[in-house]
Image (tube, rainbow, N blue to C red; front, side, top):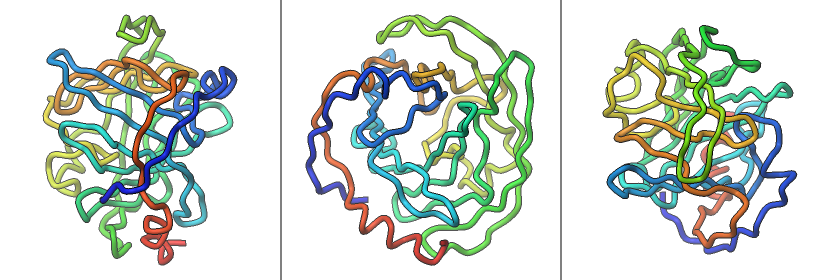
Length: 231
């Protein structure tokens, strides 16, 4: 998706940055990651969009070696849990109804939960298939990453039963996935977001919302137009 509106993201207040959610969502929040070989990825909360009967926040990827231009859609629950509504990249994607619970707060090692969700293709919002998706909390490490030291929960995404629906190589949020499944691939820290994740390689948090940054984000009028048929 073309990125063409330049904006300056102002530094967020400490209260916004440290909201007690596993994925703090406010327009302008951002996370910057770096891999062992120096590859960088940035995610920016660009605003809310209407999807079905909800208004999740869109997160864009203005910098990424494998996912530049990706946009995915998230909301937080009152207890800090995290819901995924879908993604769009390179002219295709999916919406999920109901949204998929990626983080089922409160978390504890060994906890599992299962979502049953209908997948709708984008951009036409045609029904694709219903999937049952099971997640597990594998570990509770204290991770040291470039941004600092964070207590985390390592969560594993579903087994490969939905891979065919995701073109065999993408995560549920639309990132290119080459790392092997079977263990945790996202490490969430309360009030911070993802401190570490594994997709095409392992990325660790380098900086996040408490610093200003200049980025380009999409025209949300164009994005919203995709979902008028899904309201």
